[in-house]
Image (spheres, helix red, strand yellow):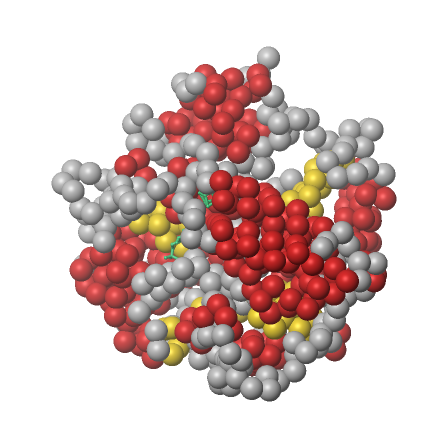
Length: 452
Length: 163
Ligand SMILES: Cc1cc2nc3c(=O)[nH]c(=O)nc-3n(C[C@H](O)[C@H](O)[C@H](O)COP(=O)(O)O)c2cc1C
Ligand code: SF4
Ligand code: FES
């Protein structure tokens, strides 16, 4: 059994409530941070831990915190990104629903470190029942002296507020989130200036993911040195993975970043193998934005090494033969699944979610959806496959925010690894309506190291 | 006339107090949620103008926002809104069949409302319940692991509640 840091106590009955959480060691890290460590020491510990942002980009958290501007007399803000809208991702929801105090404690320690006296949790609007849970936890924490004025007699003040979004994936992007929090449309801002300098209401702001902020608690509790003992290389500590698709045991798992992808999919401790005795065809390991991999490249890298559940190993081979850990949204597809159709749902998703500011993203996503729809419904031409390739290339890198890239990558990877399946759709338009292309060679061991 | 109750007005005040002085525009999305819940599940022009006056912002600032976010309904919807997820992870777990089943059971297409004004079917993108697919949102909560039998139960439950 891997070590758990975030979900260590998740099974304890009543852990959602303050008394149980406190009785099981809750708020001990906050006490340590506020009373005996001080902001600089906490920042050092977070840096030492190697914690990387769990929202998708994997940026080192300690470094991000050290960038926050500290102009005299200007308030600073911590914003917790609970927008969680990347298809395949449902881990933050689990933390907030079941162990809300872990997040509140993480927000307290983090706000203290950054010198922020107000913190906003921006939660996707569809998670409509979770704000009640969070607000109850906030009220309990306040009644017990962990929020409000002069927390635990240290002179530090903090208020935490929950703000609901209203259905817009783009509001997960940090500057769009800030715009939304200001009561506007979620249009990403042009950077620089970065939020660390000019964020919410033009004040220095740090935006971090729910899981990132919760992970600060065990880091302070056990120390950064203990944290890096878990995991491998630059993938330190534990990561929540939300596993879904055609597996026996979908759900949220906390893994030490030192297990193989194969173990994660097939062992009973995690996904429990492919459902209905089917074979593994493909997997999108880090949320809809990251490249899809066929089974053979998923379990082993192109060099023939075992692929591990780490930032580095999942990215091994670059986009030619690798993918990304991303948000930890792990989507598994069995032999009956159609890559073209799945890619179409993603293209439709990005088209729907584009904020419309940049023409390559606004037009390109719509165009990709249309072309994919033609191919999927038997109206495609061979030249459409090249057209798709061309469109995605013209979006990538030419937009204000990374949503454009996020829309382009899944299409590129699908064509790169499953081109024969696209061609089959074009050549067999009627048959493609009745059955799926199946496994082809995708699940076979790689004969030789693939070339770029 | 569109008018919040005393209790809701206090809630609006409480929301505005979360932000620094002069930043009450930040309350817009929370107040629009409150308005949609209070005034029939959708936002009419009258409702939006009312929200603008409460927050002392221009009506256009409210329209801009209301049209951007997919949770705000700009036309009337049925008493019960079925928002079924259709994105990849749900699709590979059988959401197509559930959508077809709901359509035939209620006799409506996507975006339509039953003649008695009870049910509206809307397709939505990933709601963060991919591991518990197929799923839909119904009001404040999610209904997960949907099967035709479960859909029947939900429909019966809504009908019973409405009577
Ligand atoms: C289109 C788009 C959507 C995003 N959605 C989310 C999200 O739902 N949750 C999240 O934490 N980060 C999301 N991000 C990443 C954020 O911009 C930001 O990097 C993150 O909140 C930083 O926190 P972290 O360093 O703790 O990961 C998204 C980014 C983009 C470009
Ligand atoms: S890339 Fe797309 S989502 Fe991002 S700012 Fe441009 S149009 Fe908006
Ligand atoms: S894809 Fe349906 S909830 Fe995520």
